[in-house]
Length: 304
Image (cartoon, rainbow, N blue to C red; front, side):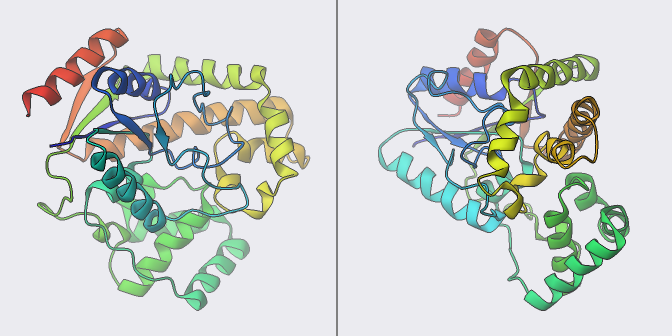
């Protein structure tokens, strides 16, 4: 039976590099589970691997949307599961890699996605504009603390969607998350990368500095000319949101850089909280890549 292997964890833990090595070792193909790497042109700020760094391994759901387009979890679920079916149809294993926890759950588990109600959505979106995102996120915290912990307040679209689902269903947004035994791929193996908080923060700060050096500001300015401000999803990405504010005169470039570091550290903590709730994840601590790859591959082989 072809395998489904998930490599997840907080940002800057080295997931992409590990996934490449695992895929090479077992002849697998990779499915992206980073919500912002779906977008064409969002390369530097999402730490997207270059074509050369992908080492010839087929990647799915990478560079599939324009920055002016919005993505939804339901859309992603359909596309990712179709990719798994396609990969397995060729007799290969699928390696899912990313830090967007809800996307990974959408692949593995039977999540329900209520249809949107335009009137309710518009009402809540209007409230967000009038009251501000802080107030809306506080409302979400009262109604569904777990959802608030997983959704950054900067992502207004997701905050609005969560509040919409709560109003439409009368239940917490996270009530749509899987029940025990509802998984679509019961044989899937999940591996979470984890490291000391101080080390992770240092890696995040260094990563942001390197992104600036590689030309993130220019990348964002170019994308603004290609419709970045028209899409609600892409413009909320870490680094991009801050540089947009810099470009619009709302903060200095240094402030944008420091705010990107701070927001990314906060996001990493939310990711850790999200993934820590899933008891199916096998946690692997920071070690040389070859050691981590051996551990992951040997674990999956022992399951067959």
